[in-house]
Amino acid sequence: MELTRIAEALKAGKVNDVKMYTEQAINNGLEPKVIISDGLMAGMNVVGEKFKNGELFVPEVLIASKAMNAGMEILKPLLKEGDVTSKGKAVFATVKGDLHDIGKKLVCMMMESSGYEVVDLGVDASPDKIIAAVKEHNADIVGMSAMLTTTMLSMKKTVDGLKENGLYDNVKVMIGGAPVTVNYAEEIGANYSPDSTEAVELANSLMGN
Ligand code: B12
Image (cartoon, rainbow, N blue to C red; front, side):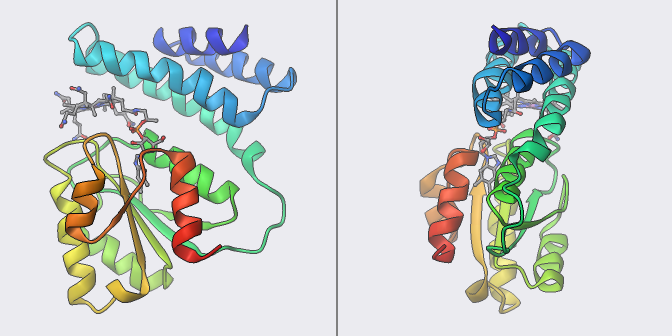
């Protein structure tokens, strides 16, 4: 079964095997979204647990992340829904001090595949950088990702900055990442979604799409 093989190869950090089994899964007609959730993410979840328990360390997690990205790159073109008219423009970033980008990339991929134009500012993006991009691209949505309890605070700074610059009323703010909660989102004036599938649903409802 390819999905189990993908998860196993990801856990072992075998980049080429992840690519090979991902291609096999595609050739066997499996849905890209299923390959992501039941193959790549299933493997990454185990890596996350082992990292937490001290059974795996940063270098192993980095290799597993590379394997995850390699699989996602193969799937990315397949998620596109053809020539859809843009549902809106979204600026996404991992916030200042934070280098975790797997989840954010996944959200960006799902947003693009559902018809949004996405500008990905990458990782370690300061409030100023995000605010400037919202202005420059006249964004409808701004999405922020944080995986560390310490970097989450940058989300509030960015929202406050959007308010100070008179941009807040014209942009929908979405936030996510492991330590982020719906309560925190409400507290800072943002919208929360726990995963990439619900992120698209949230964006659609905020935009009235
Ligand atoms: C991979 C990983 C790394 C990799 C990152 C590689 C990369 N390119 O991303 C590396 C090895 C670099 C790393 C480093 C560190 N990490 Co790390 N890492 C992880 C790990 C194992 C998995 C994260 C991941 O990719 N998950 C898979 C993706 C698909 O899930 P996700 O990110 O949650 O995203 C989903 C949702 O959250 C949501 N979402 C995400 N973003 C957004 C944004 C929006 C707008 C929306 C709507 C939704 C949304 O949708 C996504 C898809 O469904 C987690 C463990 C965990 N349980 O999360 C620890 C974890 C996040 N790391 C942790 C730590 C402590 C660190 C380090 C400090 C370790 C160290 N001592 O150096 C450094 C910090 C580096 C830095 N400055 O950022 C802690 C954080 C603890 C805390 N609460 O603060 C965790 C929780 C592990 C743990 N339990 O100890 N890490």
